[in-house]
Structure formats: C-alpha cells, structure tokens
Image (cartoon, rainbow, N blue to C red; front, side, top):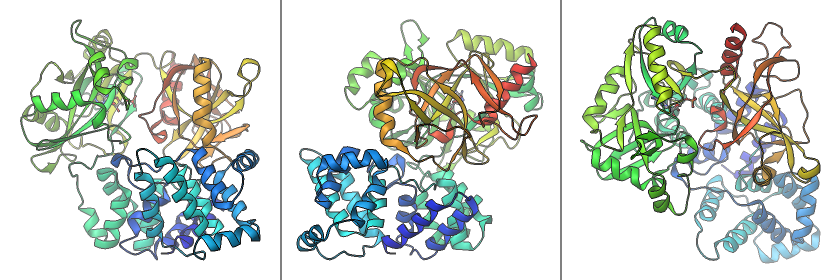
Amino acid sequence: MKYKKLCECYFELEKTQKKLEMVDLLAKTLKDASNTEIGKIALLTIGKLYPDFVGIELMIAERMAIKSLALATGKNEKLVQKELEGIGDLGKMAHQMLEKKPQSTLLAFTQQHDEEEELEVLDIWDILDKIAKMSGEGSSDKKIRTLSGLISKVSPLEARYIIRLVVGQLRIGVASQLLLEALSVAKTGSRDFKGVLERAYNRSSDIGYVAETLYSEGIEYLKNIDVEIFKPIRVMLAQIVSSSEELLEKFGGKCSLEYKYDGLRVQIHKQGKNIKLYSRKPENITNQFPDVLRFIKEASKIDEFIIEGEIVAYDLRKQKILPFQEVSQRKRKHDIEQKAKEIPVRIYLFDVLYFDKKSKLDTDYLERRKLLSEIVKETDNIQFSHQMVANSTDEIEVFFNQALENSCEGVMGKNVAQGSVYQAGARGWNWVKFKADYALSDTFDLVILGADYGKGRRAGKFGTFLLGCFDQDESLYQTFTWVATGFTDEHLDEFYKLLKPLSRDKPKEVFSDIDCQYWFDPHIVIEITGAEITVSQMHTCSRGHLDKKTDGLALRFPRFTGKIVDDRPPDQATSNEEIRTIYLNQKDK
Ligand code: AMP
C-alpha cells in the first residue's frame, strides 16, 4: 500500500468525531493491506513502530523535527519555530509549508533529490526504523538529515503524518480498541470478531502481531492464540469497593484477601537463563532492576514461567516496606547499580500466568496462587503476598488493619469461586481493591487534559491544569477538576517542558464543557488528593450515571501530591466508575 493512501485515510479520520464512522473509514483502507504490511500499518496507525515492550522508540524532540523541516524547506529554523507558535501543530505546519514551497526551492529540491516519489508504507516504516535505531555520537545530526531527506521526498499530506509520528502525536484519534474493531470489519466484514482480536491483543500486548496473524492465518486461528513467554500479558485490574460488607457481598460471602502493596507492578517472564521484567504499561524494565534479576535467578525452582508481583522499596534491617516515593526512584536510565544499593527492593508475588508450558489465565485463582510455591522459593527478597481466605467482615477488618500497620495501602479482595480466571487487560470483578478511607484521604490518578497560563510568579508557564478520569465504556476522558495547588516551581518547569510538545486542538477523546487555553494529548497521569467529591454542572465525570442528566462529579480542594504516575497509561487512570463509587460511599456516610 502506498503511504499516501494511508495518509488520505488519516486525513478523513481527522474530520469526524463519530466512532462508528471512524471504524468504517479505517476498515475500508485496511481491507486493501497485504499480509506482510498490515502489522506495520496497524502499529503506525496508533503512532508506533513497535509495541511498547520492545523498547525501540521513534520519539524525536520537537527541536530536531523543526530543524529537519527547516532543512527540507530551505527555511530559517527560527522562522519555522515562530510559525509553529501560531499554528501549534508541527504536522499541520509541515503540510502547509510544503504546499506553499516556492518554486525556486522546489527546483533546488529536485536537483538535490529525485522527483517526489510515491513511497510504500513499508518504505516509510524502514526509514523511520533506521532513524529510531541511530545512536551514539553524531546520531542527532544523522537523524535530522535522514528525516529531512524523507520529508523532501514526500507529498505535503504525507509530511503531515510523518512529522506527527516522529514527535509522538499522530492525532487521528485512533486508539487500540478502535483499531481492533476496524481490523475485524476489514477482514471479516463484521464488528462481531472484535472480541477475538481483543483477546489475542490482551495476551500479547502486540497489535501488529494480532493484525498480521488475522490477515495471514484467519480468525479461527486467532481464536486459539495463547500466552507466550516474552510477550507481556496486559495486566488485570481491580474494581473498587468501599466497605468490608461490600467486599464480602461481591464474592458471595467468601473471598481471598491479600495485602495491597504500594509499589511497582512487575510481570516476570523466565525461559532458561533469560529473564525479562515488564511494567504495567507494559514496558520492558529489565535493565532497571538488575538486583531483581539476581533474586529471581536465586529463587527459581523451574526454567519457564510467567509470574506477577509488586516491587516495593524495603528496609531489610528494620523489616519494613518503604513508601512508594522510594521505589519510584529506581525507575531510571543511569546509576542503576548505585541506586539498587541505595534503595534495596523486595518483590511480593501474587499470581502465576504461565507454568508447565501452558497458559494459566483460565485457571481459577486459588489454583494459580498455589503454583507459586512450585515456581520459586521464598527468600529475603522474594516473598509471596500476605494472604488468607475470609468468610466474615470481622476477618476482613482485622486483616485490613494489619495491612495498614505493615505499610500497605489496603487490601485486595480476590474471587475464589469457579470462574475466577485472570482477566487480562480488564478491570473486572474478580479482583477488588479496598483502601483506607476512600472518601477523604484517597488519591486519584488523573490525566492532564488541558491547562491555562499562570499569573505572577507562574507567568510564562502553565499555572492551572484541567484533569480528567477515564470512562472505559465510552473510551473517553471526562473532566473532574482543575488543580493549581501542590506544585513547586520545579514541578511547573517540568510540566511546561513535558506538556508544551503535547499541546494541540481539543482532542476528540476528551468530553468537556470547559474550554482551556491549551489542550494536550491525554498522556500524563498525576496523583491528586482532594477533600470531597461534589455534584457539578461544569464537569463531565460520570454524567449520565447520576440523579440528574446534567449532573457530573467534581473534586473539591484538589492538590497535586508531587507524584507523576508514569507507569500507568492514561486509559488506566482512575475511572469514572471508581470516582462514582467513592462519591456514593461518601454520601452514605
Ligand atoms: P490500583 O493501582 O489502585 O488500581 O490497584 C491495583 C494495583 O495494586 C495493581 O496494579 C498492583 O500493582 C497493585 N497491587 C498491590 N498488591 C497487590 C496484590 N496483592 N494483588 C494484586 N495487585 C496488587
């Protein structure tokens, strides 16, 4: 497929907000893709070259993209920068600049380069892949030159999306769920097989692989795809309950309880000597935890497995779990061994996803949990999560208090009945979380949707941020609160740097009645505390689920805790449903 054809489809997608229309538009183009190109087309369409866990990122700094564009159009870099301030979207600007390219420059181009070529999607992917893999001394210059060479070869429309791809903001409103549906329509003519594709995606975290397998092997084959070592499984998430009564009731009077550790979730894959660690996103975090690799090597009883747990910072001398802020410092690219010494960790294991060469996702929870002791032995640094089976609210209360005394956030309740399978990629009811006091002291992981400029000391930076939660049913972000408190000057500098390149027209996936000076790609998740949840006519959180049609929920006295939650993708942010549960619980009290 010519890349231009794909870009024409992207351009049409940009014009509509309607999900069904988008699915059909995309499916129409995907239908014409060949078996060898569909995997890469799928990845490019969600703005990637590889799935996240491979760890090869295209991301080029805006500054470098501007340089490439200046070089390709023969314009002064400062001028390009200035023009960008007016337009705000580098891709749109590339499109406009190339359309307006003066004849003299065009001539220079054609002498320098071949005639405008119609490149295949695979050609584009190859060039971008080369750029992504350039490293070491002089690689920035090389990237700029290669990108500028590419831009000068393609049409203005293609440049629009190439530039957006390299700066990490494709802005066509296609997320993985929409793409899976479009693939189903493209290949089978029906939306009905989206579930099959979703299942395969949840088991592999690789939409390119799912698309390729669908095209080359067909839907029946895809139905039987299962877990493989070194393909991270999309993590299972928990629903929320707000009392021990509700917890017990959800599970029909009997459930398993585990401490809820406040650390970093890790999925550990082992095959022989090869061990890899994946975060919740999932990203490959193996290099950041050489100590964890050693602990797993020491503790393993068998060769092949996939298990899950939580990494926490741990003071071995005091035998105490340390707060999240400690372990979060272990997420770094430099001084890794040094930090490993300074901040030792312990892993609390809680699940088994692959054992004896078979997926265990469809095995009931207690059976999975029992397998842990066949896989690893407990050591100082590897422990099984603290667990018991409870039949009464009294038992839950005692266990809950113990969890808090032991520096945990609360407890996880887990279904022990038949059918208590591992729901990959879902926030299902087989797991629930029950934390301290959901009404007042709990924190929310919210997505930064927009911002207004600050005044006084905050002039020239963003001063107030519009935050939202995620609505899983609609795949939309809803607004929940503005926040301006809790930020140090350093935070504001950091947020300005992080957010400015993400600024754009209001994204389709944001449901808001509020207007802001700046909208961003919903990307950055931060932790917020608040005093109370109130009904609001301004915010859209949970609208349609409350007493009055126009009611939404808002957070009073919000405050940034200082934590950027960078291991949580925005669609795993606090959900509107969780906020509603907390609100109803607060109202009951
Ligand atoms: P939350 O992040 O508040 O939605 O809670 C779910 C998270 O709790 C999971 O993603 C894990 O990282 C973490 N967690 C801590 N302890 C456990 C446990 N015993 N079982 C499952 N998840 C746990």
